[in-house]
Image (cartoon, rainbow, N blue to C red; front, top):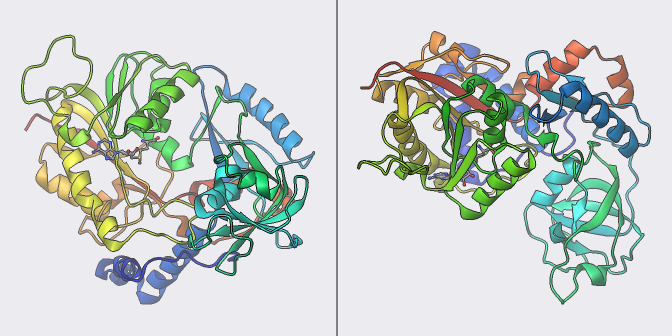
Length: 469
Ligand SMILES: C[S@@+](CC[C@H](N)C(=O)[O-])C[C@H]1O[C@@H](n2cnc3c(N)ncnc32)[C@H](O)[C@@H]1O
């Protein structure tokens, strides 16, 4: 079942990826045909949204059962009585899963059209309404209250304010315009706020705008797994090296019952503000956020005793999370990946610099978790092979929970080493649609198994630092 075309890449990126997914180790293990089928299936998955929406409950403020009840009521209200379940996860006790209904192929298309930018379109496919800044063009006579069909300009070719668009556009569903065309493109500056209220999205997911904001954090399933694998303990000193917007930072602080210290670092000032806002919203006081370049976070000189922030002395942290900046190719949905090959290959050296600093900042006996939301070998398994060779003090460690698949072949790691890695590979399951009837007939175990697989592409490695050198 493919509703959207497969994700498109620039030619040189596509060539690069083709080599990655047809590498000799993979072909020797699975054969050319199976390796190719898996790769093609992955490309289809990437252009479609994951099969479930995942929210993490802020267990610092509320119980999962309580939030589950409130969320169920909210979804009933949004979906006008349609009974979509809210599921708990047997291995991740702080998340709730909501199945995504779709694609709905029977929706009527209206003459009035609204074109939105690609990022806005992806948000709509995951349950958002359309906000004014995301609107690129509308038909000539759109008025407030009109029913409109919403399309995504996936290649970014539509001119702002255009009255017609003949380029590649992907239908996202129907909605009601909250504003007229002239209000949307008012010359007195860009309006904020709701532009189109989606009433018939192709993929039906709840909107989380202002829904239980202190009790819930919208987070992809593998991202929640990461903090459990780092397994921070109350009272410990933790470093989250690349932390914004703070999804994992706030999760780490919650798992520590807000006791100890979570140092959250990010290179970008505005993103650090977002970490602080999220910590405040979720009422977590043990988070200290700093704007700093992680590659420079190791101090070579003695520090002031009272200095809280970076740079830090060697062996300062009990556990470190390096959720690295990456090429982001595992994000879903994505129909047209715009980065160049130069950009894609620029991450490996940056990740190695950050990793080297992380190893030095970690106490002997400490835990280092490395993760990315991408699918390449060079940012994942190859980084592990490099780390094990470069830092004899590091040992790969089993992960708990282990919900995704094992590492991918192609970087020269042994089968035992690959088993210790966790790669969430959406192509591990057939791409399928979900309608309300098939949902009612499904067993809960099968739904959970689908949620574990049909998620974003993601990679996790866990290391223990055995000794100083
Ligand atoms: C994958 S995102 C982190 C997501 C975050 N861990 C979460 O769960 O919300 C990577 C982050 O690394 C930051 N970054 C990039 N280069 C960095 C550097 N040299 N030092 C620190 N942060 C950096 C980016 O600004 C971005 O916010």
